[in-house]
Length: 231
Image 1 (cartoon, rainbow, N blue to C red):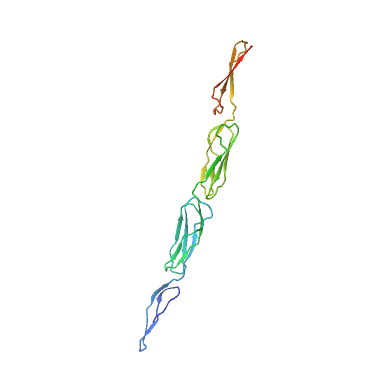
Image 2 (spheres, rainbow, N blue to C red):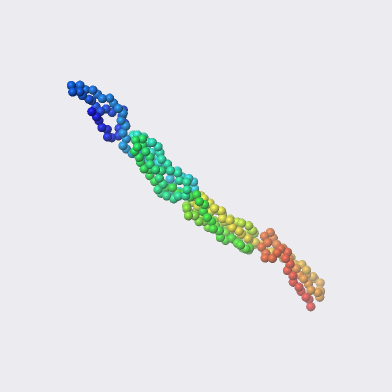
């Protein structure tokens, strides 16, 4: 005697039935355990995002197997490098009977690379008017949030930054550039003249008195000499 089980079953009392001898006597067969699970589990994918990040991303496939043999484990996959995909997948999940389910796809956007910044508006030589420096952002990953700019309007002789540029994942880059700005005119102190009449030559000296930044084209205290001969 036998009995075939073909559908999902979880029982400890499966029995093939009753056996008979040729005299008509019968005997009931004992029970056995039968566990059949032919239904695949389900999988829910989580951890993806449509927003850009600059950190590692782990997507998870969560297994669910109601009324069956139960899930063996969840699945996961870790993304650590720059990527922009809508088909990130944690893999498949399995139940304890060997049935499997492929997990769905997720979106993963990772950009760990800082943008570049091209600076314009700086000066190689001295300027006597306001200087606006601009940092132009470039980013082949998540894209730039915007550019940066800064206006220098007072005396300056050093490296200045228009600011910091950012990409859409939060990476940043500073933008340095040299600026030489002197908005103050030099002063000149004149010596050597005389209020007395003379028949000799007179040398008049113009002496440059410079401020802190020394943008003038000749050396501080360089002497300009003019000769006058009175007839």
